[in-house]
Image 1 (tube, rainbow, N blue to C red):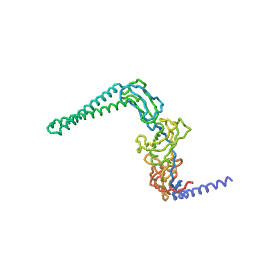
Image 2 (cartoon, rainbow, N blue to C red; image 1 turned 180 degrees about the horizontal axis):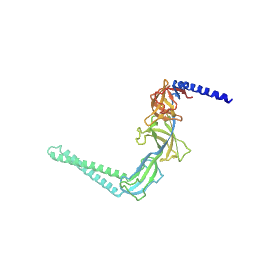
Image 3 (tube, helix red, strand yellow; image 1 turned 90 degrees about the vertical axis):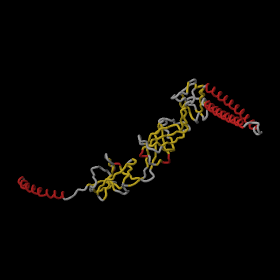
Image 4 (spheres, rainbow, N blue to C red; image 1 turned 135 degrees about the horizontal axis):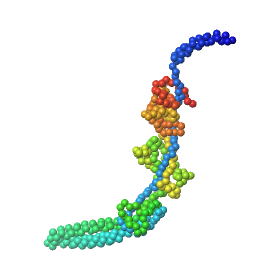
Length: 362
């Protein structure tokens, strides 16, 4: 047996040496073609739900500063007071203003009396001048000019008196609209009216609230379903509230790359407090269908974003821009058409012009 093996060993070596060149020749004669997984590009309707932060603000808010210098004589409201438009909030005591009012009224009465006297004199002189030789022409002209001067003085004193009365009205501060007092910084007897001091009161209209939401630039071109949003606050985590879109800022903030959308919420029961932050849920969509691809299909480099299209068995790179991210797909824009064949998982190593065989993904 051992002798037989010794005789067969040279024959095996010769056969293997004779077969190796044939294998090498065969391998060199066939070009290898890679197989890639691909899919057919399709369009779809964009519907996305986004969660964004928002801030609740009063519908109207004003800080009340006195226009005249004086002392607080009486406070008729306090923090938390619900007030109506025109309701007296504060009375200021300023005796010098009262004296000015009386002075202005006295001057007006004196000017009125002087004007009426000169007017009467002019009328008498005018009547007498109708008879020849009784009144000289210059006497008539002098009486007329005196009446006009007294008339001007009377008008000026009237305006001065009205101005003093208006200043006197500033002593009584009234509510500019229906609301609630949210801040009080003075007490009775306090000196007010100095420059750069805190407001004596702050009033807010909280029956309606403004909900301001910074919308990312990528979402500013979409449509909001029914123009409504739903939100919750930390103070009311188990309650869902509804707001209506009423206005947009119309400009992208360069610092945050967002646009402010303002929603209105009816807060008749006062459940929601202004100043609170809200978690806002938006249901958005596009009017026109968009091209959608799986996330791995988009290749991102330092220079650009692209997808790999297979055309007649050859790869080509197509630059794209990214739109909205959905659950398992991404919206893209570029020189693509529905029905194009794209590589399911793109990478930079798959260069343009590469011959590939396509295997479509399930």
